[in-house]
Length: 219
Image (cartoon, rainbow, N blue to C red; front, side, top):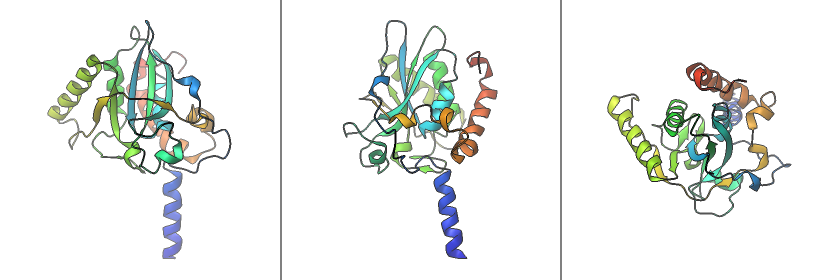
């Protein structure tokens, strides 16, 4: 019985974590999604847990043009999902967000970032454990760095969280889009993967209630 329970718990943990078996099809790296800032847009790069969850959230914000799941902050070129899962490449699962600053500011994106994950758990978000799930802000300019550091300092001073914030704030390095099957993961798998129903959907519903005035009109 003990062996059965152990196996059952292990299986449930796998189903409720982002680190699930890699599909054998449609795993081509989508290198066309590396959208960068233009004269009318800006880029933010956030790591706050499994990108299946965070992509679903940020894509609903009015002013966000695209939110691409990918990897950054590591030392290996062109890492794969399997490789970053070992923790040896140093990359974090993250989102590269291209947004219209006339509709949504970096400060507002930071607000959503802090609100939608636990920035006090080192290398962990829920059942997802490892350096690839660390909390991080990869800033693209001095203004983003200053705002991120100030926001973090103010949150720590205010006691908004029971424990100190461990979010890493470092300069953005090369961003690698994740394999195609990771993009729009919740949209494409909401009725297939239990993780979507049990983990992503409740987070998304809470987010919609808190940030209802910042959502796109069709949400």
